[in-house]
Length: 397
Image (cartoon, rainbow, N blue to C red; front, side, top):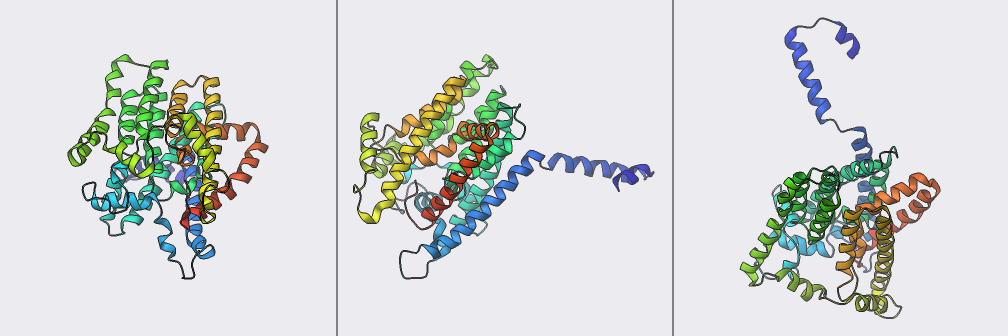
């Protein structure tokens, strides 16, 4: 049809409009890579929605008919919702010190909530959009790192969406938004676009304390990169602006520059602990009988934390072997932060932030297809169990 139209002799004005319309469509139409990634994103979002409806009905602890729409309001969602709704200067309406949470995600949730959909739904919307963006950039980053492996980008995104802890990319948590900023930031750094990288990392620093580790990794990447540009070095100071701004704001409210750390210690026992002591505490928590029988999910989650630690250390060894110094700095700083608390927990969720892990799994899956199929055979049921645990109020990391 379009070939016949081109053969005709339309009036100049009509031809000009056709060219404008066509260029607009080509510019905004998603690339084949993005379309494939978004396909996986849609499939996994639908699956998680089905689980959010079915899990409370199938695994209800009480005799009352469960409110399936409250399945998304679990754990940290309460606290992030409270920040979005009340801010930091109104006590602890969610029962936890809210200074422990950075403002980027709650601010977006508050803005989206003005549409009238409510804070919980707003958090889901923010995570949905962010996870879509992050998946596309993860695919681009994988394709950039391994151009010889055609199709590795969508595979990496698919594996990431299907991660055992993938439910936290859909719930009103900070992981998806952080990744939506960190992944394009790191891709820019790998391309030597340091100003762009600094802007994305600065935005990521408003979402999670993990931004501090990302700043460290960015500095290591800059120093070790063949694409470093010393004239761009001042840009790398940009991420300090939101970090210092948040600290100053908390100082104004709570009287301490380190109110964030104080809140972490008060609410989550994240006081500094030597790694071997932290590991010992985690082994004790993972042992049978350490918690009451009705809290068996705590025991299993601490076991999962130990598995996540092992996976992280293997990943770190691989990155050192590849001499990927920036990525190694990122993974090492992340693991180190979790291993210097009273015990190791939430490291399972933090694996979602480790883009080298999902890219590495995609590499393995493409070079050894049987290992890829084996991984999916294990990961997908785990993801369903993990999501069911979260939607029914069990501790899930």
